Image (cartoon, rainbow, N blue to C red; front, top):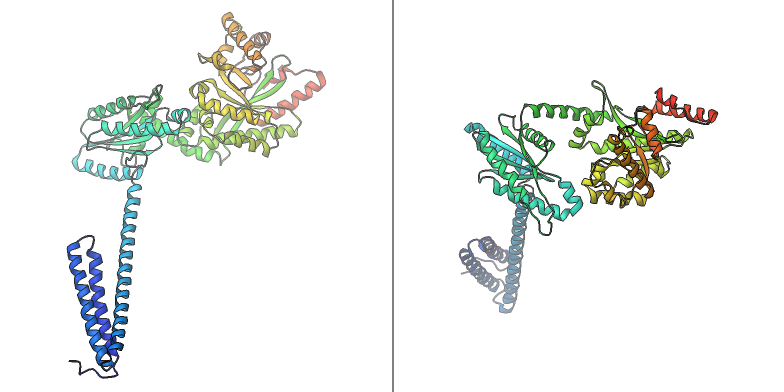
Length: 559
């Protein structure tokens, strides 16, 4: 049968091995590919592969018998070695094939999981901002085709930062999860709810023929969020403010979310725990805020922000003991703007942090100049409720004081009583940090809250600042005078300094001095002045004191 093979032609052994190897590899490759999807076919291919290997081995053995002149021992050893190599190579190739396929499958699954994770908020399992924009694009296209409106509801949880700060982030996370469930339950099956970040959600309400259709759903959202409760949190009251905008009435796809956001802020401004539809009035306010936002971004770079200083004097000696720093914006078109004109926009668009840090740094620079002129002085700075949440605030202040080589007592930080009452736990934590750092804290607008005297003894503060509403009638209303006198006496028992603001007449100054007020400020003493005028005034007052032994109120009045 094999007479055509020459005695010394060993190539036929290689050819036989290659034929058997190729057939076996093909069989095993199909086997591994089909094993998890079509096991019955895989078994058939495996049987075929083994059969092919057997036939290849027999063919190889027959060739070896002829080539090696019927030497059975050598032929058997050669055949066994060839078959072993054949099987080993086949197994290695099959294992490599399975490994590569498994790796490819795992990579595909990983990409699918990452893609899914990129579209889902991990905390609430709702679509995230990225997914929302895709849903919004599809929803607006459907709205355009059908001619039926689409409502966008922008939901923001009221006072959520207070929940996080006072009860902890674990409670805040539970609140977000429960709110997400409430929102999903409140909308219809064809609607979409997404969490776009923090405590903000957006609901896409489709097929809205009339505003009343959206009102029913949004009102259900507001009411359902009021019912949110967390175990062991009896005093937890959750509510939300919702702004609603309609597509295409209130703008295109790029404007509609901003319109709903503006309506939400109006709902918050109007008292929270309610919803508002976007309208012309909100549009005008929103446009103004956007304009201010644009201008504010350039204000710091263009040196448009300035600090003005209102002097504080000792009630008895009339010596200038410090000043309150007041922020002003020298707008190139609108002139001088006060904080109420631009701080809401700064806080809304995340610009307040940089501005507040600039205020502290600028005050330190002024103090450094006064120290160089050998004028002892202190500056009081207002701390906003946003700054209260900054856990690194004290460290930032200490770094600035160190940078300008200033003593800790150079700065006094004023926190309004209303902010302290609304954020008691957060306020107390910051007070501890200020006390540990040796920084002074003043409680501003004191007397405006009903529980003032009850918790005063527990606060680590250095100073009380009487609200100007008390000062205005102190010389005419004996009841007001009695209240102020009681507050001053209590403060002195607690070793607190008392400052009266809003002093505008000489009779007010005299009355406050008689009942023991330590310091005062107001238009009687001086109006807010620039740094240049402040330095000029303090130099003049110091010179006058050195020559005459007293500070002249006339110099202050001439400002």
